[in-house]
Image (cartoon, rainbow, N blue to C red; front, side, top):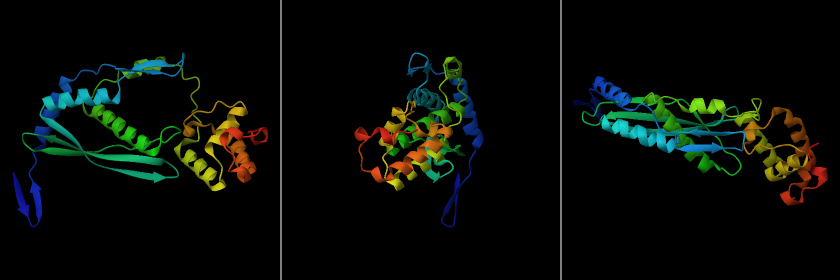
Length: 234
């Protein structure tokens, strides 16, 4: 039932209808079959549920209970401390009655990296954040964690520079006229195993990286393949 107040329409919403349908959907979905495999070498292999698979199965449970989930809006905020963060607002609607509830999701980081430009990073964040929201909404068991516990994370770096640090470093490279590819090549020449994701770079590398930037500012136009030994990170 809706009544008009001035130019606004105020709806009388029976949220119990939505919650009853949500309970039905939660009871209908027990788990989601793992359909994808992660393979990062011999030491790191595990199975997991892809975002697309999670969305597909959760959608079936919601629709069977007469529920529709909409992402009403999203925004991207950026700061030097956190980097780019996605915020989404969702609307859960009971189709037959029109009753609905809204939910604002926790932040989800947008990770831009080499080989993954901003548009792809945003698209990935939108899909992955939706899958995690659905999993939490329907209380789908997190079977992935058992597999993840088995993987070898010996190369994990808990003391990385983070998203904010990566943004600051890229800005410093641009300001100095240096190429990120040249820096990566110089680090590799010095025997450093350079991860693709700059946010995971070890903080202890920063003094040498800053020194490299200072030394190579005048060589900003040198292509990656012509980096000389003197440009190495030492």
